[in-house]
Image 1 (cartoon, rainbow, N blue to C red):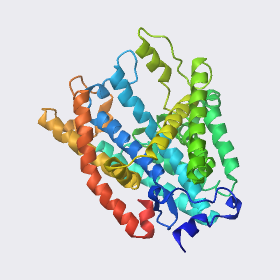
Image 2: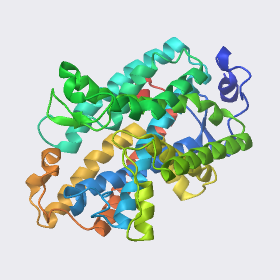
Image 3: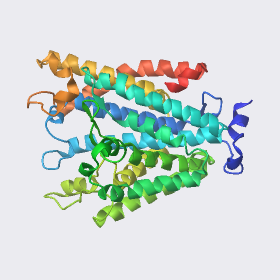
Length: 416
């Protein structure tokens, strides 16, 4: 089937809903199934991968990362705070776009049974990677369960496998209820009183330790599943003709950011931490935008997705080498994610040893992180130089793998 025809051969419940071509030819590529894909989605995904690499390089290299949180307003600086804050965009954008991608697969003709099977198997595969390849890459030591965004996406896909038969509006409603109501629901439960159910609570609702292995669960699945449901429920926006899509995305972004400003200004519901007037205007602004990621609060989701949608609009018009650079990462997100952990960890070891730090520090890294001594690590400029170096190392490999995925149709490539 011709790709443009295949892109409009949607499942019955999508017939009549924005079946026009996704975008002009210079804004699209083909998915592995031959349907048209929207480059701006891959560009946004690529951008947040670049930011994610910055965050993890900072974790491995920056001296204060071992001592205090960069969002601790009593100790941070504006540049350090913003270095961390921009990386807040990564996880919600990844999860939201995963939901959009699932919608696109459904709309491009994949049956509910096929899609459910794929989501179940790929979700379980992501969970397995989190506990093995990814966990070891972060830690370089004995088994340690550190259940981060790949775990959250994988577990959310498993849950989504049961919802793809529902109308997109129903999934959107489920997502909205979770994102808005998660903080209230969690406040009703005292984890200490759950007994044998405590671990299930930490895995699904609130961060906590793992009881079956050494480790921690910073990404409980339910609030992140809510973000994925939002992506699925709003996926139809990204199938609209280009001008209408831009208007819809801009409206969505402005609504999200307006809701954030209003709710944050009244210091009411939406985030467990209030903001306050500080000693300077800049610190007051930082207090205002200092929202909670673990678990993702309503205000955190509103702010980060609002900014991400504005970035989507800007990236639609991006041209030149930067576009090519971001697309290489955005079309190989899982592959690049796994690879960057090993590259960043290796580079951190190299510059650490060259700088006179003990090599053992970089092995069983996560278990040492909280107890680091002052003097380990480097200043923020070194972090930024290392970040650029890691990106330059990653790009040729990501570009090569993007070509492989474009030219081949092996089923297993969809799991990478």
